[in-house]
Image (cartoon, rainbow, N blue to C red):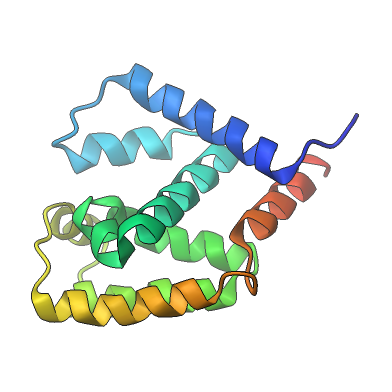
Amino acid sequence: MERISNRALISRLYSSAEHQLEKSNYDGKSWEQWYQIVQGLTGPEKMVYIMVKLNQTVTSGGFAKFYETSHGIFAPEIIHVLSEINAASSASIVTSTLSIVNPSGLLDQQFKSFIFNIQLSDMQKEKLFAQDIQYDQLDGIENLEDLLGNYLQNSINQ
């Protein structure tokens, strides 16, 4: 079987995940429903969905946008995926953002409920901006598309 490109594989998995989310007709005001739908995706679909959402929001508006658009509810899973695909520097940056937005160290449902409705202070936004710069500096050093795509390709071929 011919190997498809990493970009094509990621695109197909993301499209499939987005289709399932649209089809589910979940209540966008409920983090629980959104989270459960994402948890119901296949492992590769879920990995791609949360990684694409991270990259889209951070590159278009920084980590402040990532958290204020509620995508931050997936931050713990994103850190796990980044570690799994050997993106240690990116994982470290996302981990650093958690202590900025969640200084009290909330976990699980409390964390997700808090992050889903977070209103960042100006100081938090400034601290997150420093993480945006570090994330941007990884461009060309830690290529998440290649790392994720290679991980998925290897998973498929096993």
